[in-house]
Length: 360
Image 1 (cartoon, rainbow, N blue to C red):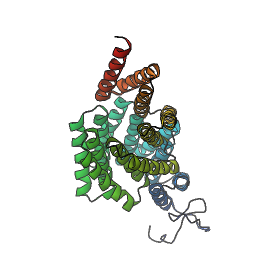
Image 2 (cartoon, rainbow, N blue to C red):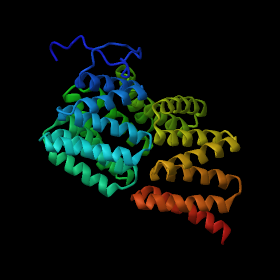
Image 3 (cartoon, rainbow, N blue to C red):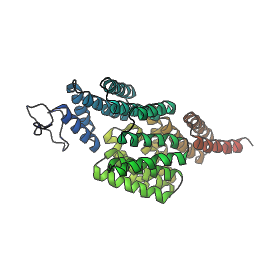
Image 4 (cartoon, helix red, strand yellow):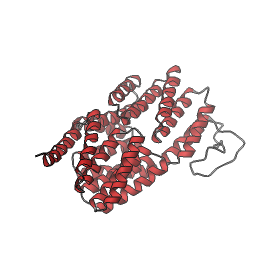
């Protein structure tokens, strides 16, 4: 970009500082994309959206910029649960990259489509997209790191902990080898989730602190919120309810600012459990109901199942056995469709115990 270093974003695309500028010279597509990435990382959603949209409008003859801007805008729409728009943009990003022979960018669009499918509960499609992405972008380390993490998530949903751990550790090793701090932070975060799932609480906290430190240093706002929320889950498991509430509320504030609806569902679930365990049933039911409703509206079956399971426990303690069984039955169906065998086994044990009490 030699000769254009002094160019700055246009009036409707703010600089990363958040200060608007008014210049007669229009920014170039690479500058718009760079500004959009910076806004995105710092959580300035509206500014990031503007920059990506303007990059798309002006990068007609630059397929690399066009494809990346389309993919990144797709992810923003996905966070807002605008599934149709997100998928259309990602498919367009793939088509542009494929037409220009940009195989790695085409693979990155496939990876995004895989993540969209994963969060919608279509794990078979997610796996197909990830495998196609790896094949198409073979040899690209950054892409391989991301796909390794995502394939690890597929195993994690099914309770296949050794397989999930192997993928996360490979992603972390790749990131450390190429000194990619943000990629490493995401891998540590997933290793923390794995440790928490196996109830290795100290290891989970260590990995979350490690990831959170990098997220704060790199100003990766979404990862910051996700680390705080997962820390809150560990605090819950250890009966540290004040710490759990504080971290979950901080995370929810971040997710609200980022318009990340799926993450808001998880934050409300954690707060609902905090209120349930500290004997505030009305607040607990309100939060857990909100978590369920957000998950339904965003087509996120895993979050819905997790929230319904916690709501069932609240109803059980209140003596509302029929309501508890209804929630557990729906959760069981959702977990079954996802192939989440460990969760299915847990829910079905709870259903059997409750039915055994009611129907001796």
